[in-house]
Image (tube, rainbow, N blue to C red; front, side, top):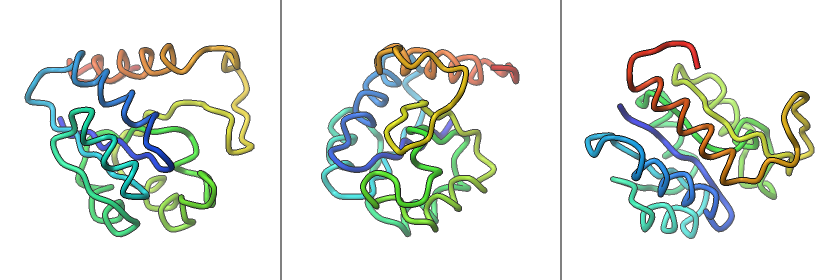
Length: 142
């Protein structure tokens, strides 16, 4: 299983995701840290990613080479993360054949109806990791 975690700004959310993935998934799970900037990438690598790289082209090249893409809903919204997610990045991620498991944070002026707005980030990450564990077991419905 290959999982790409995409984050920007300081990489704190990506770091939290990768730390949890490392604790919960088998050691052979390959985790790629794809940052929109070097600080985010560095933070995610320190959290335990197998490999990491930075920039728009990195996301273009890897989006169709992974089984799962994780991040916040902002990674499929053009100009989110203070403009770090370009329209091209959002398009490539959205069109990737990889399964997208996105955290529904409402920071990019997108509100996802039906989601508990008060659920703290660690609980959102736990829920996302449980979905990935289900996928790793070969179950399709998460």
